[in-house]
Image (cartoon, rainbow, N blue to C red; front, side):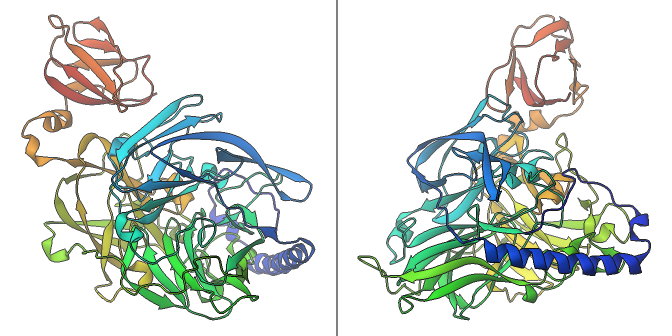
Amino acid sequence: MLFVYVNPTRQAHKPSAFNNMHFRNSMKQLLATIVLLIISIFQIVNAQNNLFIPPLLSGKNFNLNVQNGTANWVAGQTTPTYGVNGNFLAPTIELWKGDQVALTVHNKINAPTTMHWHGMHVPSMDDGGPHSIIYPNQSWTAAFKVMNPAATCWYHPHGAHTTDLQVSKGLAGMIIVRDSQELALNLPRKYGIDDFPIILQTKAFDVLYQAAISTELDTLVMVNGTPRATLNIPAQMVRFRLLNGSSNRTFYVGLSTGDSMTVIGTDNGLLNHLYKCTRIMISNGERVEMILDASNKQGQSIQLMCYGSEIPKGIKGADSIGTGMASIMDYDLNPLNGADYTLLNLTVTAPTPGAILSIPNNLASDIPFLAVNATVHRDLVFTPIDSMPATMVMGPFHINDTSYNEMHINDTVYLNTTETWSIVNRTMIAHPFHVHDMHFYVHSINQNTTIPIDYQGRKDVVLVMPGDSLTFVTKFEDFADPMVPYMYHCHLLHHEDDGMMGSFVVLDTTMHMGIGDQLMQEGILFPNPCHDYLSLKHSLKNTDQIHCWNILGEEIPLEKINPTTLNTASLKEGIYILQINQLRYKFVKSN
């Protein structure tokens, strides 16, 4: 494990940094050799640690305390962390399809945060994006009906420019959704016994042993917050729910024995049929459910591996990104890049009572959306912010030539519409692309409709390779809100924080000049966004029917400054609805 000073604040790299390339390459080779030696010694002298299994929370009402903590990942050193109901990471939340649930997040850290239910199909006001800020010592409740089928989802902050830091410090947890269809299948589901959460992450540190971000030196590998993790598994069918919760790295997962793994599910639920493979790619934010058949392996040791030497170039974790001047600063100093390494050590013990020794071939009965039914097509193009070679791989990056602006809505979609989206990557690095609200089905990659296993099933994250054009099919169902948007973004967290993100609202076309159209009118309120005051085109002199709500549905009192102006100085940053008599308008308060 390497500890090098890393500035936690992202810095722009100037062309002069590439001068004297011969000297620089020589120094890189020397430093890489030293790093490998340090890591080898560290792994020899440090014992393995029993895998931490996050506690399981079940029910319909959940209290989640975002709090400060510490961790001792390095002998004699303490690292400040964040956790939910604990020092680091978060409890696993178990939900049942059809239940009405309430999840209340209490912010007990000295910084604003948010909480996004990644993969969950929920109203935008409950989605926990950047517009649903939870300030210190305040609480926020997401209340919704669970509509997802059985799946492995997760939750993490999604604040503007703070996601990488807060996830790196520990704010991430798994969500297990169950339903009657999955319950009827002969599958392992005893949490922590034959059904295990496996949260894969890598960490980097600065000179003070604090979590560092926007760095290529993420040399500490951990599972469930446990470095050098080991786990006893029973000699039977064992279910692993794999989540890539890292900021910056893709994992190419396989077994040290070369045995096949049985993939039963991807991001948003079970596959229709099980699929056997020896490797599967899991990029940032993606989930994979797999079964390991350990029934004939009692007494054996097996390693769950990342085969980084087989990761295609251009993906974070491969041996190289870009070429020559267009390469990532310090990327080749990290010995994990392009290397094979252990994620989790497994020891096979005696089977449990009632052990599951076989699983069915047929699983779900999911019917994919069809591209032929799409009535709208969208192109989202990834580009660097300028034409410099280094920017092609280091960013920052744009989507459709636009950087994220929380005051701007990038796209408007309509309820009950099937759409195709083509994601075009014109950069030199692969981007894991995530869309909130809905799931999608990959239709083609470079017009090839043969889809690899890691792109199959109900997806909400997809890895788009450099130069590729990937098309998926989706449908917007159930939820429309003209006020609160959903997000789409790259799930490399520093890319997201640097602005590689957009927003969209879902409108209900049946509203016919109702609230949806009124909210989208422009020029009625100005300035919009506003600061200390908000003016209206018409006079308020003879009306007392003025109401203002925030995005949580809470009514906020506003005073009149004069017949056409309201005092907004006391409002917090965010989006609001103003009702005057029977008409409603949207405005944004900006500080």
